Image 1 (cartoon, rainbow, N blue to C red):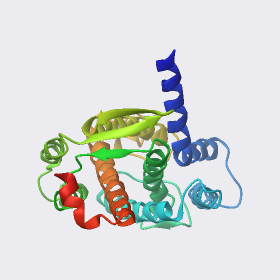
Image 2: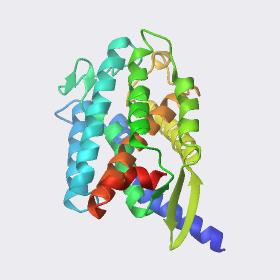
Image 3: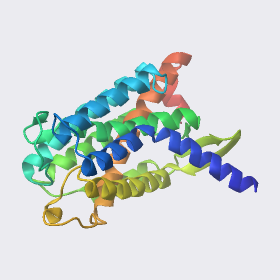
Amino acid sequence: MKALKQLVHFGWEQALSCLFPVVIFASLAITKFIPLPFLPRYDWLLIICLFMQWVMVRSGLETRDELKVITLFHIIGLALELFKVHMGSWSYPEDGFSKVFGVPLYSGFMYASVASYLCQAWRRLKVELIKWPPFLVVVPLAAAIYLNFFTHHFWIDIRWWLSGLVIIVFFRTMVIYEVNGSRYRMPLALSFILIGFFIWIAENIATFFGAWEYPNQTEAWSLVHLGKVSSWLLLVIVSFLIVATLKVVKRDIGTGTLSQIEEQQA
């Protein structure tokens, strides 16, 4: 019974952390089956996302520092969207006034919602990192993973090499989290896989409701290829590395131990 109670509490905290993504999915579903007046669907989705972001900050569900992180992810996501749509990886077939080079601006919030989840879960579960690698390793690795989303169109795809490198770099890293007063630990690599898999499930839901469209879904919706898990896994890793790095820097600045980071990692 204790294990069941802990699982329910953990699920509740996760659900609260997913509030922003849930609003996006609900908006996708509602606007698909109930046309809204005056504006195209993509524009309504942008308005809903902007309003939700304002509510999150205004109500204290997100801090201003977290808003800065989420804005960064919005920019990173839009840059990736603009490139991928241009290369024909996927498309946004509907009309909209807020589309830039074929990409609706609301799409950046789908990436920002991942950052929102990470920030919310980090705070609610009181996440701590054990044996976090040095910044000189983490930052170039995150940059290489992100750049590979662009360069594999012109060069070899090194995602599997990068995935192997992630396992090596974070082999000893553990995530410590708290559920209802009890502390648990999980290998960081396992958390990457779990989050990546659930985002793949979310991707299937999003494409079903017309958030975007892959080439094989032009005629009719079909399940997103399981190979996309690797892409989302790497994107989750980039997201986590950015959030974790900012959290660690803020922690060490707050405690006055920034100059001792390397000693702490050792």
